[in-house]
Image (tube, rainbow, N blue to C red; front, top):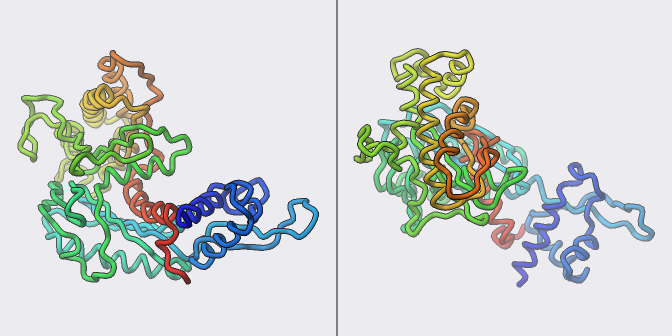
Length: 396
């Protein structure tokens, strides 16, 4: 019961926002007691514990126009507890530290060609990046209390800590702890699409409760959020939209099947169709930025490639809509940055194929997070756990 009450009090202060971000009077202990329905004495005890654990701070006295002794302004600490998110992509490594408010305080992205390197090499370099970022966060007064690693692959429910299959990295049955140099800082792996979807839900101004989130980097990832909860499937393998067949007798996919969406709407396929393969114009550049630049300039082959990708994506998303009946669809990752040219053909396919249920074009939208979604979701995962159970924080 006390754990739940700690969470309620912390959540109430967090929802009100820091004193500098709210137009209303900052919360005092008495205000919190009135909002949560507990006695002032009980709330005062809970607040004392949350301050001791570094989750809350109490600032200058505020009167708010009331007669009598002024209260003290409570806010969620912007120092102390923090979450670290890490990301391994095909062409980059990423890191993000967020404070207990969920605000990003440190961002880092390092371009790296991770294909062809061993899991041990990539994870060792990721660990070094993590150490650098944690040191930078410490300089801001932040202490990392949890680490989550976004990976472009399947992470099963059991056993924990294992990446079962990451085809675009060439990984098979990789235990992260087996290759992490410091056993005290091993991150928890999670599928990048899942984390991108959670970041979208946690950070969207007007989030819907049930939606499909689809994103692209080297491959295609998708995730389903139902009533605000991530749906992982019976074994943790849910969301493989990239291997839904859109042309059953089409191109052979690396997975062994034919006609998978990834072969038509994956970033590598779009680049190839646009004449921007590994040895084409702009080789080694930021592929997404290059596609956007050429599309914006009206380059014919790039526009044709994006139209082709959008139609294949729309076909797959129509199947997802007809199957799970979501409130919305969100384009994340590279798709968010290319949405201007993808959306017309995606909309056309959805309009043609969603015929047995109501559908409006406004239900499909690009994510404001773009390619930052997975690493932000990874970092905020720790914060969400602390908010749900503040006793995870050690007493100061």
